Image 1 (cartoon, rainbow, N blue to C red):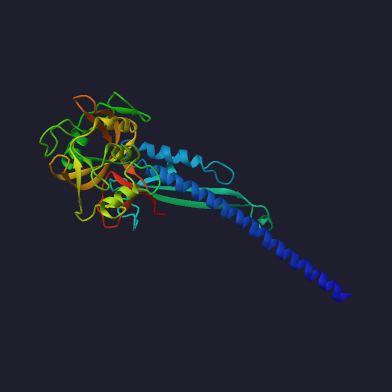
Image 2 (tube, rainbow, N blue to C red; image 1 turned 180 degrees about the horizontal axis):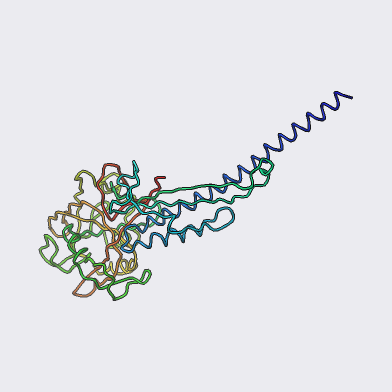
Length: 352
Protein backbone atom coordinates (compact mmCIF):
# COMPACT_ATOMS: atom_id res chain seq x y z
CA UNK A 1 0.00 0.00 0.00
CA UNK A 2 2.89 2.38 0.73
CA UNK A 3 4.29 1.79 -2.76
CA UNK A 4 0.89 2.49 -4.23
CA UNK A 5 0.66 5.81 -2.33
CA UNK A 6 4.13 6.81 -3.48
CA UNK A 7 3.15 6.18 -7.09
CA UNK A 8 0.07 8.33 -6.75
CA UNK A 9 2.15 11.21 -5.40
CA UNK A 10 4.73 10.81 -8.16
CA UNK A 11 2.05 10.82 -10.85
CA UNK A 12 0.40 13.88 -9.31
CA UNK A 13 3.68 15.82 -9.19
CA UNK A 14 4.61 14.78 -12.71
CA UNK A 15 1.16 15.76 -13.95
CA UNK A 16 1.44 19.20 -12.36
CA UNK A 17 4.87 19.77 -13.91
CA UNK A 18 3.66 18.60 -17.32
CA UNK A 19 0.57 20.79 -17.15
CA UNK A 20 2.73 23.72 -16.04
CA UNK A 21 5.05 23.39 -19.03
CA UNK A 22 2.07 22.93 -21.34
CA UNK A 23 0.46 26.06 -19.95
CA UNK A 24 3.73 27.97 -20.35
CA UNK A 25 4.05 26.73 -23.93
CA UNK A 26 0.52 27.93 -24.73
CA UNK A 27 1.24 31.39 -23.33
CA UNK A 28 4.61 31.66 -25.06
CA UNK A 29 3.01 30.50 -28.31
CA UNK A 30 0.39 33.22 -28.05
CA UNK A 31 3.06 35.78 -27.19
CA UNK A 32 5.02 34.83 -30.30
CA UNK A 33 1.84 35.12 -32.37
CA UNK A 34 1.23 38.63 -31.06
CA UNK A 35 4.86 39.55 -31.70
CA UNK A 36 4.58 38.35 -35.29
CA UNK A 37 1.36 40.33 -35.77
CA UNK A 38 2.93 43.46 -34.30
CA UNK A 39 6.08 43.06 -36.39
CA UNK A 40 3.98 42.70 -39.52
CA UNK A 41 2.21 45.94 -38.63
CA UNK A 42 5.38 47.97 -38.04
CA UNK A 43 7.01 46.50 -41.17
CA UNK A 44 4.05 47.58 -43.26
CA UNK A 45 3.96 50.98 -41.57
CA UNK A 46 7.66 51.60 -42.19
CA UNK A 47 7.34 50.66 -45.86
CA UNK A 48 4.25 52.84 -46.26
CA UNK A 49 6.03 55.74 -44.61
CA UNK A 50 9.12 55.26 -46.78
CA UNK A 51 6.92 55.53 -49.87
CA UNK A 52 6.47 59.22 -49.00
CA UNK A 53 10.02 60.25 -48.04
CA UNK A 54 10.52 61.99 -51.39
CA UNK A 55 7.26 63.92 -51.18
CA UNK A 56 7.37 67.68 -50.65
CA UNK A 57 4.96 67.28 -47.74
CA UNK A 58 6.69 64.92 -45.31
CA UNK A 59 3.59 64.78 -43.11
CA UNK A 60 2.46 62.12 -45.59
CA UNK A 61 5.05 59.80 -44.03
CA UNK A 62 3.18 59.80 -40.71
CA UNK A 63 -0.23 59.63 -42.35
CA UNK A 64 0.64 56.62 -44.49
CA UNK A 65 2.42 54.79 -41.69
CA UNK A 66 -0.41 55.33 -39.19
CA UNK A 67 -3.12 54.35 -41.67
CA UNK A 68 -1.45 51.13 -42.82
CA UNK A 69 -0.73 50.08 -39.23
CA UNK A 70 -4.45 50.32 -38.48
CA UNK A 71 -5.06 47.74 -41.20
CA UNK A 72 -2.79 45.22 -39.47
CA UNK A 73 -4.19 44.38 -36.01
CA UNK A 74 -2.23 42.64 -33.26
CA UNK A 75 -3.46 41.08 -30.03
CA UNK A 76 -7.02 41.33 -31.39
CA UNK A 77 -6.82 45.12 -31.50
CA UNK A 78 -5.78 47.83 -33.99
CA UNK A 79 -2.13 48.87 -33.90
CA UNK A 80 -2.35 52.53 -32.94
CA UNK A 81 0.78 54.48 -33.83
CA UNK A 82 1.49 58.05 -32.79
CA UNK A 83 4.00 60.49 -34.23
CA UNK A 84 6.34 59.48 -31.39
CA UNK A 85 6.48 55.99 -32.87
CA UNK A 86 7.70 57.27 -36.26
CA UNK A 87 11.17 58.71 -36.85
CA UNK A 88 12.51 60.06 -40.15
CA UNK A 89 16.18 59.59 -40.95
CA UNK A 90 18.84 58.80 -43.51
CA UNK A 91 20.46 55.49 -44.49
CA UNK A 92 23.29 56.08 -46.92
CA UNK A 93 23.77 52.44 -47.85
CA UNK A 94 20.82 50.06 -47.53
CA UNK A 95 23.17 47.09 -47.95
CA UNK A 96 25.04 48.11 -44.78
CA UNK A 97 22.42 50.21 -43.00
CA UNK A 98 23.20 52.85 -40.41
CA UNK A 99 20.16 54.93 -39.44
CA UNK A 100 21.12 58.60 -39.00
CA UNK A 101 19.04 61.45 -37.62
CA UNK A 102 19.66 65.13 -38.22
CA UNK A 103 21.73 64.84 -41.38
CA UNK A 104 19.33 67.13 -43.25
CA UNK A 105 18.48 64.30 -45.65
CA UNK A 106 15.57 61.86 -45.47
CA UNK A 107 15.19 58.50 -47.19
CA UNK A 108 14.32 56.17 -44.30
CA UNK A 109 11.60 55.65 -41.70
CA UNK A 110 11.92 53.91 -38.34
CA UNK A 111 8.73 52.66 -36.69
CA UNK A 112 8.49 51.20 -33.20
CA UNK A 113 5.55 49.84 -31.24
CA UNK A 114 5.04 48.06 -27.95
CA UNK A 115 2.14 46.03 -26.60
CA UNK A 116 2.25 45.75 -22.83
CA UNK A 117 -1.00 44.00 -22.04
CA UNK A 118 -0.65 40.64 -23.77
CA UNK A 119 -2.92 38.41 -21.66
CA UNK A 120 -1.82 35.12 -20.15
CA UNK A 121 -3.97 32.05 -19.89
CA UNK A 122 -2.08 29.81 -17.49
CA UNK A 123 1.14 31.62 -16.55
CA UNK A 124 -0.59 33.20 -13.58
CA UNK A 125 0.33 30.13 -11.59
CA UNK A 126 3.96 31.26 -12.00
CA UNK A 127 3.19 34.82 -10.92
CA UNK A 128 2.82 36.40 -14.38
CA UNK A 129 -0.37 38.37 -15.00
CA UNK A 130 0.47 39.76 -18.45
CA UNK A 131 3.34 39.87 -20.96
CA UNK A 132 4.71 42.48 -23.38
CA UNK A 133 6.30 42.68 -26.85
CA UNK A 134 8.48 45.37 -28.41
CA UNK A 135 8.92 45.65 -32.17
CA UNK A 136 10.97 47.84 -34.51
CA UNK A 137 11.24 48.23 -38.29
CA UNK A 138 13.33 50.45 -40.57
CA UNK A 139 12.44 50.90 -44.25
CA UNK A 140 14.55 52.71 -46.82
CA UNK A 141 13.90 54.22 -50.24
CA UNK A 142 17.00 52.63 -51.79
CA UNK A 143 17.88 54.74 -54.81
CA UNK A 144 21.27 53.22 -55.61
CA UNK A 145 20.00 52.09 -59.01
CA UNK A 146 21.82 49.51 -61.08
CA UNK A 147 19.11 48.95 -63.68
CA UNK A 148 15.59 47.95 -64.62
CA UNK A 149 14.34 44.37 -65.08
CA UNK A 150 10.85 44.08 -66.61
CA UNK A 151 8.65 41.46 -64.95
CA UNK A 152 8.05 38.31 -66.96
CA UNK A 153 4.27 38.18 -66.84
CA UNK A 154 2.68 41.48 -65.92
CA UNK A 155 2.10 45.02 -67.12
CA UNK A 156 4.84 47.48 -66.27
CA UNK A 157 5.57 51.20 -66.58
CA UNK A 158 8.47 51.21 -69.04
CA UNK A 159 7.62 52.59 -72.52
CA UNK A 160 9.82 53.07 -75.62
CA UNK A 161 9.93 56.89 -75.44
CA UNK A 162 13.29 58.65 -75.21
CA UNK A 163 14.11 62.15 -74.03
CA UNK A 164 17.37 64.16 -74.07
CA UNK A 165 19.09 64.12 -70.69
CA UNK A 166 19.63 67.88 -70.78
CA UNK A 167 15.95 68.57 -71.53
CA UNK A 168 14.85 66.36 -68.64
CA UNK A 169 17.15 68.15 -66.22
CA UNK A 170 16.10 71.56 -67.52
CA UNK A 171 12.33 71.15 -67.68
CA UNK A 172 11.83 69.25 -64.43
CA UNK A 173 13.20 72.38 -62.73
CA UNK A 174 11.98 75.23 -64.94
CA UNK A 175 9.29 73.71 -67.15
CA UNK A 176 5.67 74.93 -67.17
CA UNK A 177 3.30 74.10 -64.33
CA UNK A 178 -0.09 73.70 -65.99
CA UNK A 179 -1.42 70.42 -64.56
CA UNK A 180 -2.24 68.66 -61.35
CA UNK A 181 -3.97 65.36 -60.65
CA UNK A 182 -7.29 64.58 -59.00
CA UNK A 183 -6.48 61.03 -58.11
CA UNK A 184 -5.36 59.60 -61.44
CA UNK A 185 -7.12 62.23 -63.56
CA UNK A 186 -5.18 65.27 -64.82
CA UNK A 187 -6.78 68.68 -64.33
CA UNK A 188 -5.80 72.07 -65.74
CA UNK A 189 -4.44 73.71 -62.61
CA UNK A 190 -0.91 74.16 -61.26
CA UNK A 191 0.38 72.14 -58.31
CA UNK A 192 3.92 73.43 -57.90
CA UNK A 193 5.50 70.63 -59.95
CA UNK A 194 6.97 71.41 -63.37
CA UNK A 195 5.99 69.33 -66.38
CA UNK A 196 8.25 67.89 -69.08
CA UNK A 197 7.45 67.52 -72.77
CA UNK A 198 8.03 63.91 -73.75
CA UNK A 199 7.18 64.74 -77.35
CA UNK A 200 7.64 67.91 -79.37
CA UNK A 201 6.88 68.84 -82.97
CA UNK A 202 10.43 69.60 -84.07
CA UNK A 203 13.39 71.17 -82.32
CA UNK A 204 14.67 68.12 -80.47
CA UNK A 205 18.35 67.77 -79.66
CA UNK A 206 20.08 66.73 -82.88
CA UNK A 207 16.83 67.14 -84.78
CA UNK A 208 16.83 68.07 -88.46
CA UNK A 209 13.11 68.65 -88.69
CA UNK A 210 9.74 67.81 -87.21
CA UNK A 211 9.60 64.86 -84.87
CA UNK A 212 9.66 63.83 -81.27
CA UNK A 213 12.68 63.27 -79.10
CA UNK A 214 12.65 59.57 -79.80
CA UNK A 215 10.60 56.39 -80.05
CA UNK A 216 12.96 53.44 -79.59
CA UNK A 217 13.11 50.03 -81.23
CA UNK A 218 13.19 47.84 -78.11
CA UNK A 219 13.01 44.38 -79.58
CA UNK A 220 14.03 42.71 -82.80
CA UNK A 221 14.38 45.04 -85.81
CA UNK A 222 12.23 48.03 -86.69
CA UNK A 223 8.89 47.83 -84.91
CA UNK A 224 5.44 48.47 -86.42
CA UNK A 225 2.58 50.47 -84.99
CA UNK A 226 0.87 47.52 -83.29
CA UNK A 227 4.05 46.40 -81.50
CA UNK A 228 4.93 49.92 -80.41
CA UNK A 229 1.33 50.42 -79.30
CA UNK A 230 1.52 47.28 -77.17
CA UNK A 231 4.76 48.49 -75.58
CA UNK A 232 3.23 51.89 -74.85
CA UNK A 233 0.00 50.49 -73.43
CA UNK A 234 1.38 47.55 -71.44
CA UNK A 235 5.09 48.28 -71.08
CA UNK A 236 8.25 46.88 -72.64
CA UNK A 237 8.26 43.18 -71.95
CA UNK A 238 10.91 40.86 -70.63
CA UNK A 239 11.08 39.23 -74.08
CA UNK A 240 11.40 42.58 -75.88
CA UNK A 241 14.38 43.47 -73.78
CA UNK A 242 15.99 40.06 -74.25
CA UNK A 243 15.57 40.37 -78.03
CA UNK A 244 17.35 43.72 -77.91
CA UNK A 245 20.50 42.82 -76.00
CA UNK A 246 20.33 39.17 -74.96
CA UNK A 247 19.75 40.09 -71.31
CA UNK A 248 16.67 40.60 -69.17
CA UNK A 249 17.88 43.86 -67.63
CA UNK A 250 18.89 47.38 -68.59
CA UNK A 251 22.04 48.10 -66.56
CA UNK A 252 23.32 51.61 -65.96
CA UNK A 253 26.46 51.55 -63.84
CA UNK A 254 29.97 52.94 -64.16
CA UNK A 255 29.09 55.00 -67.21
CA UNK A 256 27.53 52.12 -69.14
CA UNK A 257 25.02 52.97 -71.89
CA UNK A 258 23.08 51.41 -74.75
CA UNK A 259 23.01 52.44 -78.39
CA UNK A 260 19.45 51.84 -79.57
CA UNK A 261 17.93 52.62 -82.95
CA UNK A 262 14.71 54.57 -83.06
CA UNK A 263 12.49 56.92 -84.99
CA UNK A 264 12.30 60.71 -84.51
CA UNK A 265 8.69 60.66 -85.72
CA UNK A 266 5.50 59.22 -84.32
CA UNK A 267 2.44 57.77 -86.04
CA UNK A 268 -0.97 59.23 -85.27
CA UNK A 269 -2.23 55.65 -85.00
CA UNK A 270 -0.42 55.41 -81.65
CA UNK A 271 -2.62 58.01 -79.99
CA UNK A 272 -5.26 55.52 -78.89
CA UNK A 273 -2.56 53.50 -77.12
CA UNK A 274 -1.05 56.55 -75.44
CA UNK A 275 -4.51 57.74 -74.37
CA UNK A 276 -4.82 54.61 -72.22
CA UNK A 277 -1.86 55.84 -70.17
CA UNK A 278 -3.20 59.32 -69.35
CA UNK A 279 -3.01 59.60 -65.58
CA UNK A 280 -0.63 56.62 -65.39
CA UNK A 281 3.01 56.69 -64.37
CA UNK A 282 5.20 55.61 -67.28
CA UNK A 283 8.92 55.07 -67.65
CA UNK A 284 11.04 56.45 -70.47
CA UNK A 285 14.68 56.58 -71.48
CA UNK A 286 17.17 59.43 -71.28
CA UNK A 287 19.82 59.80 -73.97
CA UNK A 288 22.90 62.01 -74.01
CA UNK A 289 23.75 61.62 -77.69
CA UNK A 290 21.71 61.30 -80.84
CA UNK A 291 22.72 60.58 -84.42
CA UNK A 292 19.79 61.50 -86.61
CA UNK A 293 19.07 59.54 -89.74
CA UNK A 294 15.32 59.23 -90.09
CA UNK A 295 14.02 55.88 -88.91
CA UNK A 296 17.63 54.77 -88.38
CA UNK A 297 18.37 57.32 -85.69
CA UNK A 298 20.65 55.98 -82.95
CA UNK A 299 20.18 57.05 -79.33
CA UNK A 300 22.80 56.60 -76.62
CA UNK A 301 20.64 55.59 -73.63
CA UNK A 302 22.06 56.39 -70.19
CA UNK A 303 19.15 56.24 -67.71
CA UNK A 304 15.46 55.53 -67.09
CA UNK A 305 13.13 58.05 -65.46
CA UNK A 306 9.39 58.19 -64.73
CA UNK A 307 6.51 60.63 -65.09
CA UNK A 308 2.71 60.75 -64.90
CA UNK A 309 1.04 61.38 -68.25
CA UNK A 310 -0.88 64.68 -68.11
CA UNK A 311 -1.70 65.49 -71.73
CA UNK A 312 -1.64 63.75 -75.13
CA UNK A 313 -2.21 65.22 -78.59
CA UNK A 314 -0.45 63.70 -81.59
CA UNK A 315 -3.15 64.21 -84.24
CA UNK A 316 -2.91 68.00 -84.58
CA UNK A 317 -0.06 70.03 -86.07
CA UNK A 318 1.09 70.94 -82.56
CA UNK A 319 1.81 67.40 -81.40
CA UNK A 320 2.57 67.12 -77.71
CA UNK A 321 2.89 64.55 -74.92
CA UNK A 322 3.36 66.05 -71.46
CA UNK A 323 4.38 64.21 -68.31
CA UNK A 324 4.86 65.33 -64.72
CA UNK A 325 8.05 63.91 -63.18
CA UNK A 326 7.50 61.55 -60.25
CA UNK A 327 9.56 59.59 -57.79
CA UNK A 328 9.24 55.93 -58.72
CA UNK A 329 9.80 52.78 -56.70
CA UNK A 330 9.11 49.21 -57.72
CA UNK A 331 10.41 45.65 -57.52
CA UNK A 332 11.58 45.87 -61.14
CA UNK A 333 14.20 48.44 -60.08
CA UNK A 334 17.53 46.69 -59.47
CA UNK A 335 19.86 48.24 -56.90
CA UNK A 336 23.51 47.77 -56.04
CA UNK A 337 25.75 48.77 -53.15
CA UNK A 338 28.27 50.65 -55.29
CA UNK A 339 25.79 52.52 -57.49
CA UNK A 340 25.33 56.28 -56.92
CA UNK A 341 22.13 57.73 -55.51
CA UNK A 342 19.60 58.45 -58.27
CA UNK A 343 17.38 60.67 -56.13
CA UNK A 344 14.08 59.78 -57.79
CA UNK A 345 14.13 56.09 -58.77
CA UNK A 346 14.56 53.14 -56.45
CA UNK A 347 12.83 50.47 -54.44
CA UNK A 348 11.50 50.20 -50.90
CA UNK A 349 13.35 47.76 -48.67
CA UNK A 350 13.21 46.72 -45.05
CA UNK A 351 16.67 46.85 -43.48
CA UNK A 352 15.57 45.94 -39.97
